[in-house]
Image (cartoon, rainbow, N blue to C red; front, side, top):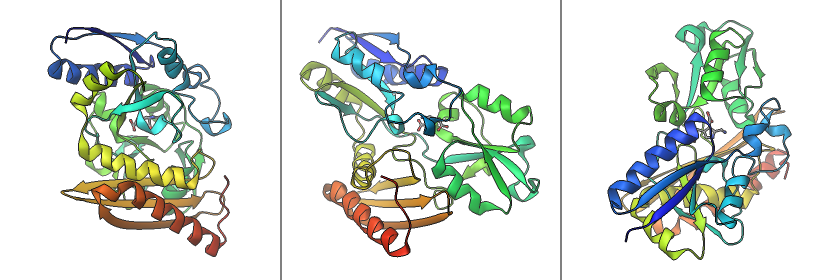
Length: 306
Ligand SMILES: NCc1[nH]cc(CCC(=O)O)c1CC(=O)O
């Protein structure tokens, strides 16, 4: 099959780089196909001075790319899965998930000092309630300040002394080929990642069988199963970024192991749960843990903003 596909990406260095890396994988599996990358800005790219939590609504990094798919301006779009809302818009599908990058969050301190050696009080840069509620447990007297901008901007803000430390996803830095000190990684039992963190989703029109078949060539089955479990948990809770939600699934032979968390960043409360099922039951597992954690939150009097 020889054909030219138009690929939509956000213009940021990270988005463009991960699109190029994904298209390279597609080229290997589909040597007769041609790919043209087009950059499309999203609302999330244009508004850079407001905290993400103040935007209202999900999908601020995906909507304009989805419109390009509807309008036939692109055959498929490449997203960071964690930016993709849990409810899939009519007529569009997430057709393939390449092998997931590192899902972990990093705590990058200025000068690489250890957490114990951070000043008290210290200022940590992150706008993510999920990161705040978990990182707050690491040490006394942590205050948080919002952090936006592309990766280089964020790293520069740390260097300039605006923050004592910042939180970033390892996946972004790895894709950009940046070196990461081993001590910066927060294990998932300290900081459970965002649903889908480190994974890429390729979206296209549901009626475009030719594009779907081509994209499936780079789908990774274990990544897809993990994503099904994590997103099923998110759907059961009700998604959105109003309260801290995390999940991380691993797949080994026929089993999927799902860890989930729900928190309240105003009170500092956190609930964590985990359970295993067969791969075939990944969706049910997410739903089951979602329902169980809602029940536990009610029991503990944790208010869930939905
Ligand atoms: N919310 C922004 C965002 N969306 C995806 C990534 C990169 C990590 C990934 O691909 O999961 C980032 C940056 C970050 O969280 O540090």
